[in-house]
Image 1 (spheres, rainbow, N blue to C red):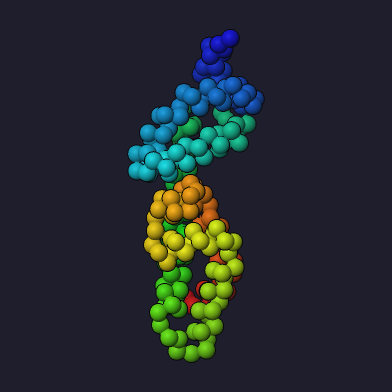
Image 2: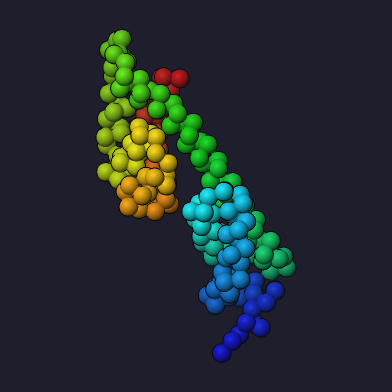
Length: 188
């Protein structure tokens, strides 16, 4: 039985707000392709666009009780999608800055003889922090920062998705920030 007539406009929004899974499926089937094309234009990367759209629909479901049923659900979806992309960009920039600093120190540690005991100590702390990462996080991190591979290349090499690579590297950043917070304050 096709209830698609019941899932239009405000009725669709109201049903979703109540947690109706069929309404969610109607929205997914109706807007996935359009959101993917929109995210692809923003990200210029198919894998990232898919991840952004997936995150958009997850956010729609988790925030469904906050939906204003008087407003357009399509506009709401595109706004979530745009915000997910902007969140990704902000996170990438923040992580890139931190990692650029860490990469400089690590490269210095690998290629330059330290001048004093304090510098030797800092270098060892960086190496130890990296070695304490979980095996997959450490592998993804090293492939990205030491070998200069893209997330896509890392995904292929490790046999995992690009999203999983992002998760591993994000976890690595988080752990390194915790481990090296005091050390970085002393460096800069």
